[in-house]
Length: 95
Image (cartoon, rainbow, N blue to C red):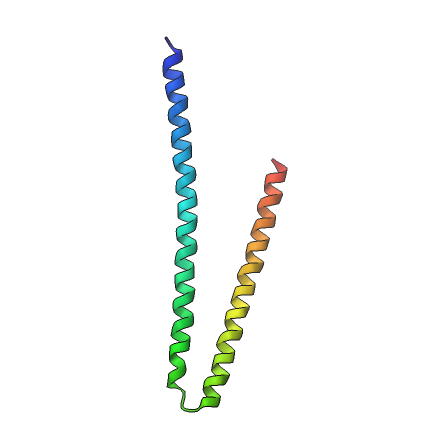
């Protein structure tokens, strides 16, 4: 008779573990989405401010600087992702 509660407990633990894994992945996706929205808003606000410049040359220079800044930020994010991926691979290999 004691096997029924043990099986029930094991099934409950599997379901709870699965729910926590789904929650963790959903939270990760939500954080990525929020970060992407913030980056898009920053970029579009910068481009919107280009209209405030009086000369075409100043607008072109500032647009080049905005693009350069975006490229640098994207490269930094890629570099950060590569570092975190390599560190997680090292941690998994130790286990």
